Length: 110
Image (cartoon, rainbow, N blue to C red):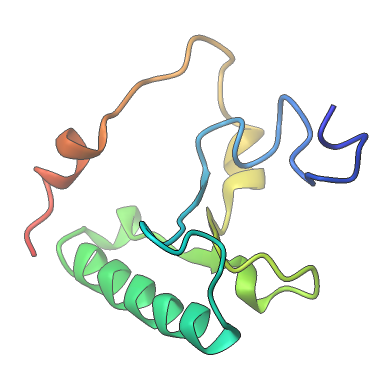
C-alpha cells in the first residue's frame, strides 16, 4: 500500500528491507529532522563503524554497504548490503532468521 501511495520504494516481498538486507537508521531524538550536513556526518560514522566490523572479518565475509544519501532519490537514513540482489537469487525461500542487535553486536569488537 505504501508503494502504491508513493510513500515507499520497497516493494514486498523482495526489497532489501523485506529480506533483511537493508535498514533505515534515524537519530534517536531528531528522527528524520536533520540537515544534509548532519546526515553526511552520520554517513561518515556509519562508514567508520563498517570499517571496524570488516577489519575483523575474513575477506570473503567483508560487507560493502550502500548509503541512500548518495542516491538521486535521496534517502539518507537508508543503508543496504551492496550485493543483496545477487545474493537474493541464491537464497532458498523459508522462514527468516532472526538476529537481535545485542546478539549481532556481541560478536563485534569495538
